[in-house]
Structure formats: C-alpha cells, structure tokens
Length: 297
Length: 74
Image 1 (tube, chains in turn green, orange):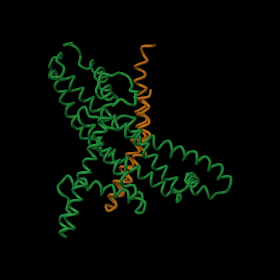
Image 2 (spheres, helix red, strand yellow):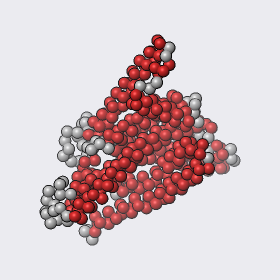
Image 3 (cartoon, chains in turn orange, blue):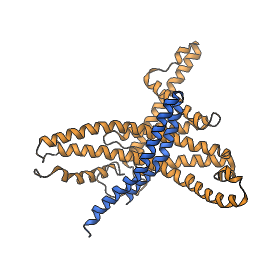
Image 4 (cartoon, one colour):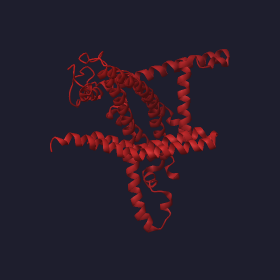
C-alpha cells in the first residue's frame, strides 16, 4: 500500500462520496441500495426537518419580539421602540421586505401580497437547508432529487391552481395559445393554434416543474460532489489522513493546491446556495404571475 | 470488446454533459454581457435588470441541467 500511486485510490474515494450523498436511513450509514420504505427516517428528512425547525424558531422569536415592541410603542407613544432589535431581527426583517418587494414587483401590487407567505417559506426554507448542506455531514433538502421534486410540485400545484381559479378552466387553457394566433383566420387558428397549444402545454405543465426540481437538485448535488472531490484529493495526498502513504514534497504540494481550491469552491457554493434559493423563489413568482395574468397574454 | 464498455460509458457521459453545457454557457455569457451593457447605460435600472437577468439565466440553464441529469441516467 505504501508504494501505491495515491490516484489509484481515487475511484474508491469517489464511490464512498456518492454513497455519502445517497439517501440513507439516518441511523444506518452502511445501508446499501435505495430506501423504499416511506416510514424510514432518512438522513435528508432529518436535516430537512432541522432546517424547518430552525426557520420556524427564528420567525416565531422575531415575531414575538416585534409584537412586544409594537405593544411598547403604542403604550408609550415612542416610535423609536419600533427599531429592529439587534442584527438578527434586522436580517429577518430585511429578508421579509425583500420577499414582499419581489412579490409586488413580479406578481403585481394587487395579487402579490397574497403569495408572500408561500414565497417566503420557499426562500427561507431552501436557503436554510442549503446552508445546512454545507456543514460537514450535513444534508441539503434539495440535494436529494425527491426533496427537490417535492418543492417543485408545491410550486406547480400553486401556479396551476391559481391559473384555473383566476381564469376558469377554459380561459386558462385558451391562454396557452398566443393572443396573436387567436385573431388569425380559421385555418391558422386550428393548425398553428393546436400546435402551439401542444407546445405550450408541455412547456407549462411538464417542463416547468421538471426544470424547477432538476435545477435545484443538480446545482446542489454538483456542488457537494465538487467539494467532496477536493476533500478526497487532500485525503489522498496528505499522509495524515491516509496512514499507508509516504509523505512526498509533490504530494503535500498537490494537497495544498487542493485545499486552496476547496476553500474557493466552498465560497462559491455559499453563493450558489443563496442564488438557488433566490432563483427558485423568483421563478415560482414568475410562474404565478403568468397564471394570474394569463388572460392578458 | 467487453472491457471497453466502462471506459466508453465514461466518455459518453462526459460528452453528454460537456456538449449540453456549450450552448448554455454561450447563452449565459450573452445574457451577462448584455446585462452589464444595459446597466452601464442606465444604472438606475440595475435592480430590475438583475432580476430579469436571473430569470433569463434560469431558463437558459435548463438545457445544460438536462444534460447533467442525462449524465447520471446513462
């Protein structure tokens, strides 16, 4: 083992890494194969519930604090008591303001506020669980394909439901055909209209939820694999982690390079975690907007 | 022949993702560049342009992601 080329050990490390990222029962890391029993608590579910509890706790604490401040302000008539109490409260307030601004900007001032709770839940839940996925041994809810699909399905149900509720079943389906085609002569309406209807139907009802879930999953999974591969490089090149290896100048140097890249990629993954939460939320808002204003298109 | 299968599969997987990424990366580059141009021209619109840019990137990115998924399905 001591004379082996460290790179020969890499495929084994990659296999370990993929196993580490798989959905496993939380108390049995050596489980092999897919978990099919829905009653089994998996590692992703445990970490997802942890992020859910974290978000709920943060918001309940902040809301209580603000209610107390509100009461104090109305009793004393002192408006300065309404100032955000500390950095954490200010951060949460800024986040809520950001979501409210997004909802009114994208969906519209009239229909937007109704969707602030949904968009806020998506944003904070995905953001928190993405950050949890960046802890060593932590799991991001969207890092399992099933988790990302569940989130996308909620978004899909909402925008389809809003489309049908706002425009009626016939109105919503009719709006899938562009308005310009609807004003053409009867041949164009039947020929081009039915083709475009099919295209728009597939893109709205099938491709949207697919890309929504795949985008979240692929970004997180790819990020975790990249971090894992650089970590595996360090583990392979530094004898501290692989006792059988002989320390060489080249090996230690290569490990150092991998460490530098690991830090850079980690910073990039923090950026990706924020961006993906933002993109998921704003795309949900855009889809809801297209359903709300379907009859105008 | 049998011995070649794992290697060829690996090459095929890499090609599936690599080729899928070409178009998307060009598209995202164009979007980013045009957004910077627009921001330089009208800095007061920067916020709105950024939002639109992220939406456009999200749509463009979708095809590369399909390639990424295909890599795992192959």
